Length: 176
Image 1 (cartoon, rainbow, N blue to C red):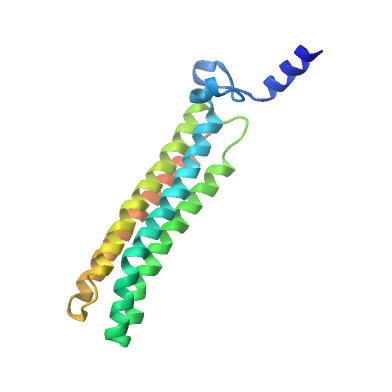
Image 2: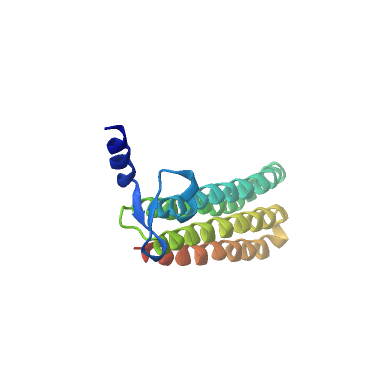
C-alpha cells in the first residue's frame, strides 16, 4: 500500500523532458531536467535583477537629485525623470516575471522552459546594467548646463532595457 501511494505521488510530479524521458520534478537529483525549475528561475531572475537595477539607479541618482534641489529648487522636478525611468526597470522585470509564471504548465517542455529562463535572464541583466547607466547619468545632471546631454544618456540607458523587454517578451510568449 505504501509503495502504491508513493508511486501515485511521483507520477503527479513527472513531466516529459529532454529526448522524451520522464523526469521526476519532485526529487532534487533530476532538477537539471525539470522544466518547472528553469521556467521559475527565469521568472524569478527577471523580477529580482530588475528590482536591484531599479534600486541601484534610484540609489545613485537620489543624492544627486537632492543636492540639485537644495541648490536650485526649480531644477528638482526636471531631475525626477531619472527616478521615473529607473522605476520603470522594475516594472519591466515584473511584467516578464508574471508572464513567465503564467506560462508554467504541466505541458511545458524543457525547450520552452529554457526560453523562459533566457527571457528572464535577458530582462534582469539588461535592467541591472540600465540601472547603473541611469544612476550615473543622473548623478552628472546636477549642473543645468549639462542637463540636456545627461537626459540623452538617460534615454539611451532606458532604451537598452526596452530592447531587452521586447526580446524577453518574444522568448517567453513563444515558450510552449
